[in-house]
Image (tube, rainbow, N blue to C red; front, side, top):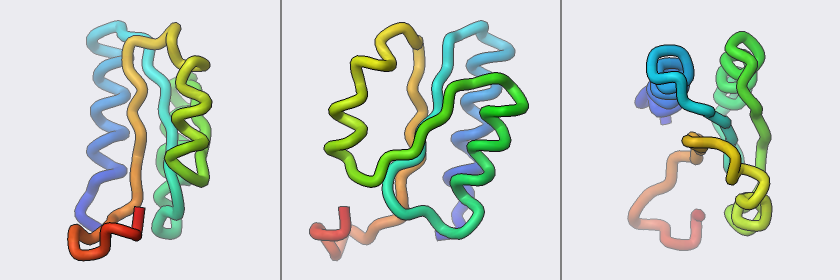
Amino acid sequence: AGSGKTSLLAKFAVRASRDRNLRVALATLGEKAPGGGAVLESVAKLFQLPYRTFARGADLKAALRDYLAFDVLWVDTPSVSARDPEAF
């Protein structure tokens, strides 16, 4: 937590959309640290990118066909420890 994953993902998404002219969508998966989802949602609104949140990986998997028209789908995930395989 706090390592800058969400900020980096937002930068990648904006650059892919603006500088490389790719069709980009954003998503948040699982429980995020307070404010993490809000950052991506704000970036999505500002740059007119589609944004959704998913509670579980299975929910995202079920919705993947909704994203076939996009070149890139950036998914922000929660921090999980390799020591806790059940966490995700």
